[in-house]
Length: 369
View 1 (cartoon, one colour):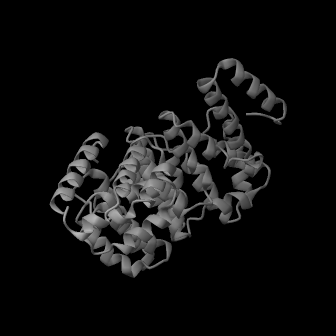
View 2 (cartoon, rainbow, N blue to C red; view 1 turned 90 degrees about the vertical axis):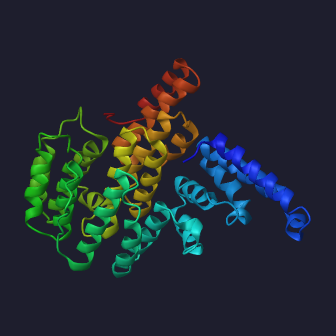
View 3 (cartoon, helix red, strand yellow; view 1 turned 45 degrees about the vertical axis):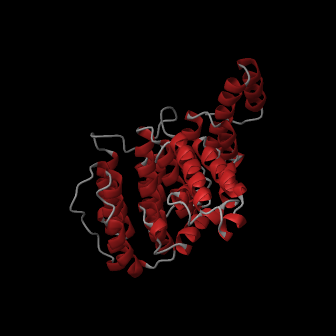
């Protein structure tokens, strides 16, 4: 996306030109400069990652949506980044078939809407539209190919091998697709994935445990949980160990099901978001993280990725808001909330204040990790 400074300069020039040309028309007489001012404020807020404020200004200047080519795209991004994915979808729908809706993310949101509503046949046409953008960058290509593969899976109930090998991503998708089909092969797919030497696939121990728990194989789940190390495990795996050892099997079933189409897609977009975060492309990472959360809000633990992105950019107010999702019942994640709050206080105030905070919380917390 073009820089904020250039956008400001360009918009001012366009506004001055249009005002000069149309100064004698009724449209110019009726034009309220406040709309343009709000649009400029929306762009500035957007660039500063002040999502809520940005959306507010976009809402106040929507009359300009058909006047400026990039307005709809900026507005859609702002809505998604603010967690208003459904509203973004509605905006795209209202402008469907118009020139200003011809961008990758607009077509993607229409697909997301259909996936949510299980309108897989209608997605065949939408995927053809999305295909036009697949050569714009590698992520567009990967997203198109993977969504096409998943749509075929949901329509035909047969695992569709992708022609292109996307490495780690392909192996994960394959395991999840076999799980969706309730195939016995999914067990070996997960085990091979977790034990692979070509990368860290420890996250997928959760999905394997989820699979065997749904098979009511609680004994195997408990046996595996004893091998999970308390130190060095990710938040998700450490939390899963506690759930299993407390026989809270329903909690594991509750947050994810490989029989649920949108849960599978949520995990795919979580992966895309994670890859983009590793490249420090935080705007796009946050965009796909919000889509992931929208598709499976039950798995709110995935908001840790979003939270870490904003922490990296020192947007501590957003981080604090996201941390509120984790309550005491979420043991490991609640402890993570306390530690992250400690870090924020240390950065915003001083180490003395942060130490005071964590000592108070520590005394009230049972068995901290």
